[in-house]
Length: 114
Length: 119
Image (cartoon, rainbow over all chains, first blue to last red; front, side, top):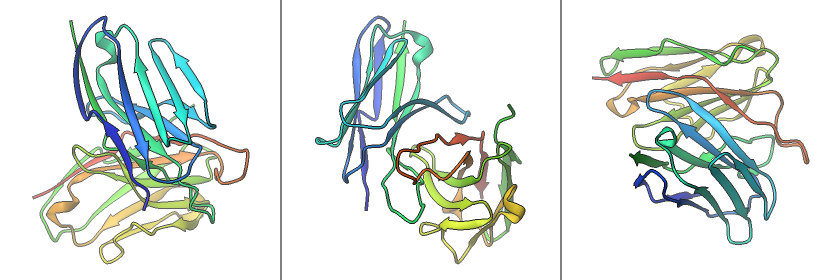
């Protein structure tokens, strides 16, 4: 059974600081997704990482994927309050037969304080 | 482009009652997913449809949950009878094609969800 673990699960940080969220997964996959969820809202796709060494950046967020280590990171640079949300990583486990539903981590609840 | 539509947004029922949720995917999207998101956890896949056929329902509690996608467009998810532990947000998502073909990857777009409270 595929397991996806995120850490930390809760993060409170100050504006202007840098921090990294880690996502470890237990089986071979080279398809990893990062989503953002605001309270009471649905999931917003942030990044799709499709190969070992993939790096994508959007604004103050940068995501990377190391398939050999089964690790993805989401790095926040010079955090601003608007980035406060819950961030999920999700893995496409290649279960075959056309099944491609994602397995999600528990999420990292990020609060950025002025 | 209109997003994934779900209704109702909120539902409160008593245990042992039945409930149904409705999802209208993005027009033209062949693949539809239902996820269950319990408070404080990530979404968990319940069922995946490709057009009107079931691709994966391995995590669907079939003794009480059922889902259908008639005509390969709208879908309904039903719970009968509901239990307290079914309290969660039920998310519907759709994507243009199945993503299993090598080299073809598409994203899934999520609806706002239906928040179910079982009392």
